[in-house]
Image (cartoon, rainbow, N blue to C red; front, side):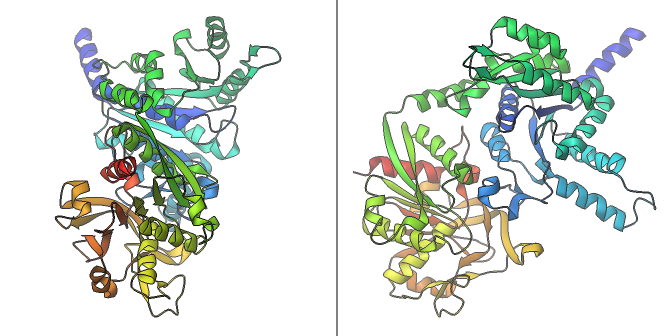
Length: 546
């Protein structure tokens, strides 16, 4: 009878969702998101259903109102959530769509708890960090797992162990480790510095970081050590001994030439095998054939192309992370390397434009908000249009293309948007009521995935190969349809239309080798194994441009 129960328990255990918690120590920016995504990729390659979520310790409800210089790009999910850029890594690695549930902030946690308190749901009890805040964190951690869709849920805890902001999350993880038992494990990412003067790798920061985690009641099961030099066996043994983990659980994460090498490096280190053994799970061997083929093309390009990325936040490349990664995906697909030339929009004038773009084969005008840099973007688009340089405009980039065409082809010299010039009689870009009300910043936005019908025989149709698509949005302004016929008479065609609202989604020039602007954000859908067709065809056009 005892053996029968044991067999039943093992089967039940195999069916239950497992939870992996990833924390970081010593310093920030070690790459918890990349390690989490790489592990998830390996587990998915074994046939397991995996998702990743990010818990951010800042008090903003979401990064929607954060300056890109402060936080990098905002990543938008299919359901319209504005999230941390790490979710972009998750999607690019896994080819799995994320949602609002995949990114939680301290602000949202407190907002939920305070809202419940105001509704009287705590029945007059004193609301405290423990248990109310930690219970809300635990509830959110398990939301995705309780859907029944996933074998494994990986939760990345933002910040660094020792930061005051992360304490409630670590307490919640401690409680969940106790409650979930063998259905969970902890991975801690640390840094092993190399002292050049002593010619020696130092493990003390790792020991201190693990001790700080122990003080929060969490013993890591696996340590991933970021390093610039190979970890020799004696060092691994020392870390294992002083940090209470097995030698096999000390994983090296050495610097890579590209983040897309990391899954294969983690496979070599047997991270996925160690995780599955500790979680008592069985799976198929990982199939990384397609991933390896991508890296083969990435490392062996047949040529190099240079594309100017025109934006307002070019001093921080994370502000355009998804666009830059889309260049990588599309470049490999075209057997070429894309060298992105970052051009500050405010530096572009009629006097400087020719020199700034003299050595690039294509121009991409990036998204953005506000008036700063608008005139430079418009000048860059004029130069691309008049000189037959392949052009791709995204969101504000498309709107600037419309304004440029209205001014310089239609002759509407005062053409602009309602935001930049409310008094103009030619508001070719107009404010439109969006789908999500952003009350705190006094506006509305169209957020998330929306359908688009593409007109047959257009460049857009050639690119997508279909007449019906869905793309993600994040903007407040739309093309003013009152001017549509005037634009089309002069050669700028609306080749993509929202079927529910008749809003213009795509504009293009048939007289140009490659000139297209899109209201949406195609970069948010590009992944390693499924590069976005707009970027693929744009890079192809640049590659073929004499």
